[in-house]
Image (cartoon, rainbow, N blue to C red; front, side, top):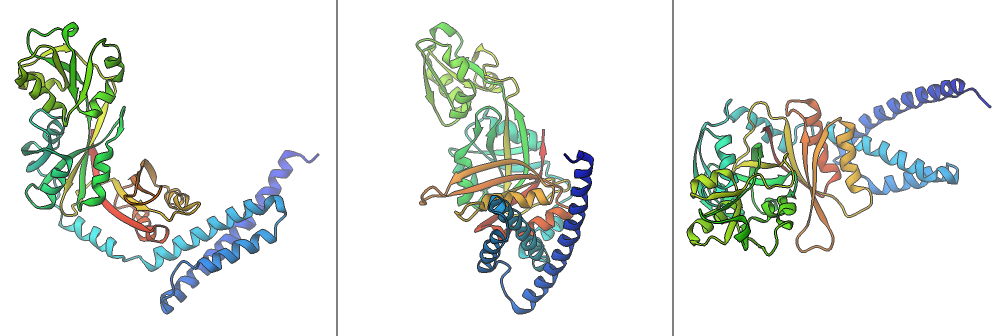
Length: 381
């Protein structure tokens, strides 16, 4: 039996040869890119890649055929990424991003006209008040109304919940993202504490109906499960639930809502902090009509549609890995009017001034059927 140290020395010598050969291969990739630039040929040549992978498999022992194809598939992926970065160094999107950085003010606005879903006291309003020192808020009935108000120029910004640390993503907002044009300019993580609110004179034992938004209900599932003889009803907003309870005149109904709504609507707190987890946070996105990128932007959101073929999502993820870009969120949503096909939303951590960011933006088109840049921004906590 060979000594482990000797085996590792042999592996190191082989790896050195692999590195030298890989460098030679990537140098050829540069020459290929120059040829394709001159002739206008596309970067991806599927016929060539299929033939290459088939040939690789024939040159290896059967038990290594799959491994060899996976290895060469990754090598060709890196080759195409390098070609894309070289040929698309000054892409249209790259130009838009540079222009937005140059035109965006150095400071995030202190005052603004802001659209929120719900009524006064909603968590979206609390988020808006954290994002802006002086927010003039217009309340809309729906999340779609917020998108439209921003897109049509009725409000400068919109504030929308996108995910909760307990209940997960707000799917309705993600579905609306595909249908509307907007740019994310900032995000906020807001600590969410739910209270059970009712009119003065009400008692917890006397409550028969509880109203709130679906997300709040999901975040308080354990508390609600411990109540006997109580029906839970979904309404459009936690603050709207509080307002309805306040105007009802009934002491047998209650709302799951914020502490601010207790004061705003003169309600009594029957139970405090009834969410399942104390570290309950909701992320809100602040959107604008046009692309704005404020100083310090280090988070980027993308919407991607990949081919419905094996390994297509992996190829996108491989780009992030190769560039050492941290993926902090991956959300999948079904594509309307399609059979089991999905689009993906990514949140990435990477300073917008980093060279890795520019390389990623220049190369994603190569591995996506559709690719949409949703904005770069910083997140408040």
